[in-house]
Image (cartoon, rainbow, N blue to C red; front, side):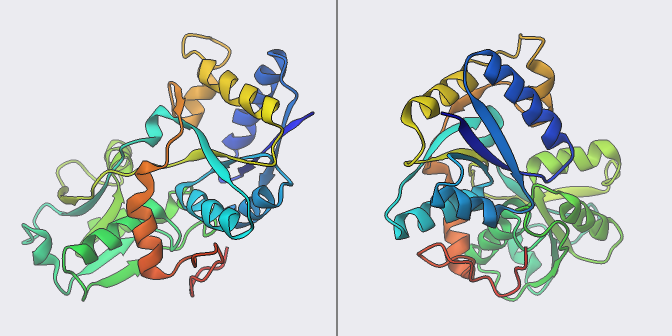
Length: 280
């Protein structure tokens, strides 16, 4: 039986990655194929309905998968992740000349964030700031790639640009993109500093639904875990996907995002999309 995986086409490189992985997996004897979606909500719907067996899910898509599956008497498993998906943080960045020295100094300030559905640059950092007592923030949101759950980092990059331009007092972004934006010049050297950092959280995970063919699903996970960065065939694909090794999936790192989802009513307890300003 063909093991069918869903993925979201957040960037043209997704085709290159999964075409390459498909060739490699099939060469190892696994009958594997994939389909691409324009946004995560339809991918989650199809996973829980059993139209696909596995889904390469964003953290927000994982949250919804769990809730929707439970509401429909199904179960999903966080089967495998990238080594780069675990123990991440987001940062709140200010300009180097900002008078703010602590999070409390941002009371009443304007904070730039990414898209409405970005876990790393909107949902988690805003939840963190609320937890620090900042309930009077003005939020300037940059809705680029809505439906892609922050995988398209255009909104995050626009938030960084707004900070440098002096249009906002602070900006939120994942720590890895803070480094990237410095390397590419979006954040000029010495122009900004990190004011605060969120607790750690996990990012993407390969979700497998309990209606998937058990043997094929187990072999899919085993083969991904066996991929070696030393293999010249798969190394370019691993680089494009942003990992050196696949590691066992886990669910303990989604607490901060679960809290943010509940605080904002992004999804309800049964996995329905209830975010008022979200149109994927």
